[in-house]
Structure formats: structure tokens, C-alpha cells
Length: 450
Ligand SMILES: Cc1ncc(COP(=O)(O)O)c(C=O)c1O
Image (cartoon, rainbow, N blue to C red):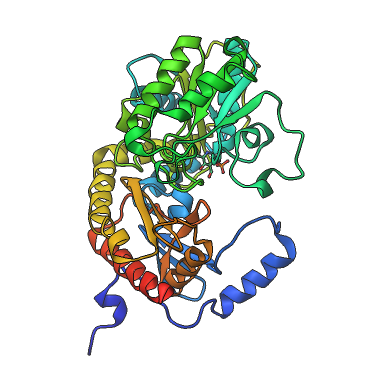
């Protein structure tokens, strides 16, 4: 008897029929009646189970997940060691509320985060349940510890959707429209996107005008240094298009911040936890933020956020900040198992697989007229699609078409920014799976451009 397709390629996608299948259609119809229409679903994937980098839908179609639940399942879907840690913890103690009581899992995770945070200094940790909450904690701590109220953030940034985090977010008008007034005291600076320099410079003549704008305009007009608590920055801009700044940007930011006693807050919610091939994106630039916001990949899918701060800043009194569920024992157990796996093998796998992907994708701007730029660190890779390589006019519809075509071929990718594809697979991804993704994307690009 011949081998079935499933036996021949158990680690790769299999699509059984037109998408969405009948069961998926039924779920989507129910969803459309009761779930908030504010969610952005770009294709009809109705997930039923996941294992490693694979996701199976309710009709038995198998997909290769190059989204990792939007950069969340760092250790892959349902890693056996994370599942075991969760099951054991859930059977022993599911909740106690670290705001009012002690349990060892929270202490152990805080110790671990303090140990792995960038820089050689004492750290303290406050726990929440999401990226937005990690940012809220960061903003509050910066204001509280400096007694200043202004915050500088960047255009194109995404920091979450709660009102404080949303005030920093400057990605899409629809995310802010109708929700004002947002918190006062937040101003924005251009982000160093060297492919589309916001101040019209060329990389070779750049004098880091993005930081110059902070220093010479914002601090001299709307955000005087003595009133400015913090600069909040994504070390790799995520939702904005997977944009990697030059190293000098971080050196300059640190110079300006330290000169004026302004705190540097790094939002590592998407770029942290090994995704870039180092534990933190900050590590690529030898940057040492005062406060780090962490979430997404930290617990492989369980809700957890953390504000990791210099210990000498986090001296606020009992009652100043806390969250009932934040640092829940089950989420902490998942995070401890996740970090162990990252340190043992997955961060180095992210670096290796990222290099493997990049090796081939680096050629794409030469091979495909409408690939303008390929950039990234480790497994955080953006591919910018343009109508014309010379004018760099954005091609959002082409991007959307490629996303759709990849889905139909069993590869899950999403967009980032107006016109970029984002690749952020789980860190367990194999070379064979990367090769499949490369071939599929090349096929989609060829077909979509034709
Ligand atoms: C960089 C960054 N910060 C914050 C957030 C908000 O995280 P959450 O959706 O968990 O609130 C996100 C989410 O995409 C993010 O990418």
C-alpha cells in the first residue's frame, strides 16, 4: 500500500478542499452574529488544534503557521513541556492573586526576568496580563518615578489598545478614531525607517535626524526635558512594518535620554523572548533600557505581561499598581518552561532559521520587481511590496493578495505596516518548513505579480 500524503510530509501543510471548508463556514457565520466586528480577520482560518509550527482547522486542513499567533507561541503550539508545566500547575494552584498573597512561581519568574533583562543591574518586575498592560505599567512607573508627565513615542508604533497604550500608538487612524481624548502629554517623533526615511535622508548622510527631532524640536517646544518622563520605543517596529533601526539610533537615544534624566522604555512585546535570535532586540544594539515591556512570547500563549524595571525606579508603595490576574501561577509556570526552552535551544534555532530564510530572501528585491525591501532580525522578518522599485510606491493590494494566496496554499502569514508581509514563525520552525515557506511565497509572488 502506498504511503498517504500525511505520512510522506507530516510536518508540512495539507489542504483538502476549497477554503473555508463547511465546518469553518458554520463557525464563521456564528462568529459574525456575536463577536465584536472590530477584529480584523484577513482570511477564514478556524483553528482547532496546533502542534509545533502546524495548525489544523476544523475541516482537517493543515497549515504552516508563520504568524505564531502573532508572535506569541514562541515554543510552537502546545509544546509538550509547556503543556506539562501548565497542567501540573493548574492541578496544584490555579489562582491566588499575587497582589495580596505570595506564591513561588511569581517570585521565580521575576528572578528569571531580572536575570535575563538587558544590562547588569538589579531589576524588579510588575505583572499584568497583556502587552498593553505591560505598557500601562511602564507609563505609570515612568511618571511616578520621575514626577514628570510627558511621554515621547514614535509614529508608526503600536503599543496596545487600552487608553494609555493607545495614546502612544500611532499606527492607524482607525485604532484611535472616536476614542479621544486620549491621555494628555504624549507627543510623537519620526521612527528611523531607513527604506523610507521620514526626513528625506539617505543612510550614508543620516545624522539621526529622528533623534535630532526629539532633541531640537520636541524637547525645545512641547515636551521640555524637565517635564518629560520617558521615551517609549519598539526596538524593532512591529505592527508598523517590521522596521529595524540603525544602531546609531539607539546610541543617540541613550545620549539624549541620559543627558536629560529621561527614562528609556523599550517595548519588547513583539520583538522580545528570543524572536530576533537574541533574547531581546535590545541585545543586538547593546542597548540597556530603564524599563522593558514584555508580553506575547513570554508564556507561549497564556496571557501574561511584565513590566521589568530598574530596581531603583520600582519603589512605588503598596497599592500604587497591581492586577488581580497579573502573574497568575499557571501563566508563570508556562513562562518559566518557555524561557528554559528558549535558553536551551530555541533562541539559537531562531538565529539559524532567520539566517537561512534571509539568505534566500535577500535576493528577492533582485528577482521580483515588486519586492522593495527585505529586512529583519532572526525570525522577525518584513518584506515590503511596492508598485515600482524606483518610486517605492506602496502596494498594499498586492500584499493582501499574497497573504490570501499563501493561505490557500497552507501557509499562514500576515501583513504589517501598509504594504509589508511579516514573517514571525514559532521558534521551533525547521529548515524543511522554512524551505516550504520560501517556495510558497516565491510561487505566490510570481503569480500575484503576473
Ligand atoms: C510592540 C507591541 N506592543 C504592545 C502590544 C499590545 O499587546 P496586547 O495585544 O497583548 O495588549 C503589541 C501587540 O501587537 C505589540 O506588538
